[in-house]
Length: 289
Length: 158
Image 1 (cartoon, rainbow over the protein chains, first blue to last red):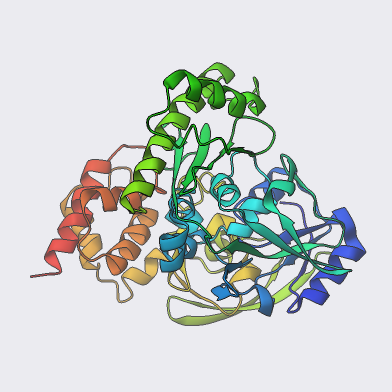
Image 2 (cartoon, helix red, strand yellow):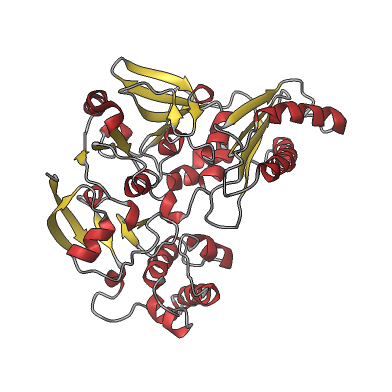
């Protein structure tokens, strides 16, 4: 690994100042499960690594605040998956967090890091999109909230500006009852990156929110407000037409070693239908996990 | 010049203070500076689990942790499972089940199993498999490893 300077700020202001001063030569370190691999293979060569784990505001915490669930940037996947409120209100997020990497990875990897890396295969992204998550960004100009749907640009690139860091992910409390599920396709059981990762949520007014990843440069959110998908009695061909429109944004890379574009697109359709069925079932039975 | 950072870490119950370059991992320091070579270096990308240690109670891949990140923390390595040179019941169960073949992955398997049994003293087969999913065994001794973990869990009740 090449050498770099190490900074361990204890306040957001200090971290923002470092990011402003160093721009792209600074990299934030949270769990490190992606960054340290990139430091070692040389694909990231920052002059300074800014460890955010001692910043008071970012310390691991999941708290309720004015009807929202606030997950601080230091919160690791293990704690997201185990949190009782996440399990009750956002069960598909708990499911997604519990399949990221292995126990060792989940003990270290943060939810915010998963989002900031902007990997198209990020397993928590689809559930966060379905649940209308917002990213809380702190920067030189203060705090702003970015809808997650406006956060991803392409692999590794987000709409964060120079000097900005993510302090928390916020989930608005569910206004309507929703049944939701996260599903993924991997090459093998156990520890693997997803070839397709997907979340479907159906709410009591008949709106279906579907988000999918690992099939294009960024995770995609699509919404059906017609009520057709949510209606178990709607004809199959009507549903198929809506699914086709929803999947139109999928464009898997032909260069990926995990799965061919044909396979991913075929699985996306299978899993979309399967997830819709589970979401409808969960909405009807009130079973959330 | 490479910046050297003072770090203090409790390793297997003993406070160790040293200076380390920021780009040296916890794994590097354990093996090269503290001579704790039970923890193995293998894939270096967090896939194989050979470098598994406990940091503040939780298992981590020590190849993906900078030594400076462990500053102020508490680390347990496989050497810490047998502090007085006597094998722990879990280690004995691994031997009894023939779980150690080439043995290279075993320190990591033991650390993952140790953490699993603390959280879940009576794991199902599926829970053992999930708990140890981050630890690869190239000899494919998974059957015996799983048996050893289940046997250790059962023995703890007697």
